Amino acid sequence: MISLVQILREAQGNPKAIILAGAPGAGKGYVLRGLDLGGLKVMNVDDKYIANLKQANVSLDLKRSTPEERSEAAKAMAAAVKDFKADVADTIEAKQSFILDGTAASVKQTTQLKQELEEAGYEVFMLYVYTDLERSLRQNQDRFEKSGGEDRSLAPAIVMRTWLDVTKNWATYKDIFGDNFVSVANTLEDEKLKDVEDVIKKYLDPFKPTGTKPKTPSQQARSDKQKAELNADVQTLLSDNGAKEIIDSSVSKEEAQSKIKQFLSK
Image (cartoon, one colour):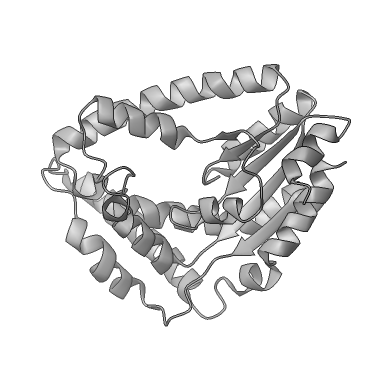
């Protein structure tokens, strides 16, 4: 069987970039492996981040991190992002085709990247992987242990915020990328929690950060308002119709592979 990488190498024309979008634990790596893209260069800031955490002797189980570990983790991420941006810039300058494996939680940054790639002569495609909030949280919670301590588990509050942003971005990305967009749904088959407070109690409360600095009354009020707004947005998406359009518009991995083949062979 001819792989997508062979098609890409044989195709004439512009270099290609595939941007992955999806929350932590959405199964982007699982979907990628099923699309026979193993030989295409995959770039993920997490590779550098995890290496930096190990070098700083910080546990990859970030859901249980201490204040000191959170501080070191922030430094590790800042350094990883700096190095990663340089690697991406070098890849673009060399006109190499690649897959950018990230969350695409920021519409602004993703749109800017798409524009920069197109100005550099790239054709750009987005593969969006949707998953339920509960699957995202569950996968993140178990990742450190299941990997034998080799992969990181994030603070669940960060996972929930990222899931919300990525899910809300779906319609925008579908519009921006047009024909060069496909979404795959990787959801739980068992019954899911439908109340945000139940989700918080089960997945967030057991890992509340410890040792945080006390907030001033105004800071606390602002924080409470932001949490209330976030929880309301999450609750809307947890409703029966919250993510229905995303799921209904998503295709099978086989259909996604066919569409990506067409993109790579242009």
